[in-house]
Image 1 (cartoon, rainbow, N blue to C red):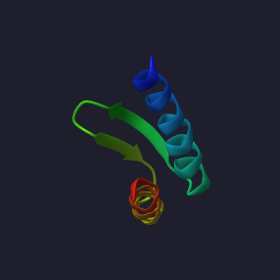
Image 2: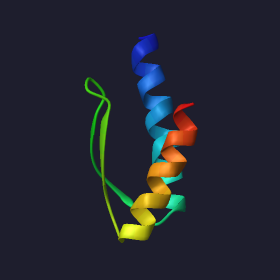
Image 3: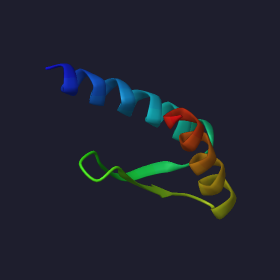
Length: 56
């Protein structure tokens, strides 16, 4: 249950960060920690930096 709550909370923060930078989430694999994003190149780069900061 705690892991599910953690994943849900993380996904909510992830979604907010991605939307703030003009991207969309294509796919999230929690097992392999892979996040696929879509959007203009500059926006995807900004999203990636925001997600890097989120995970620190």
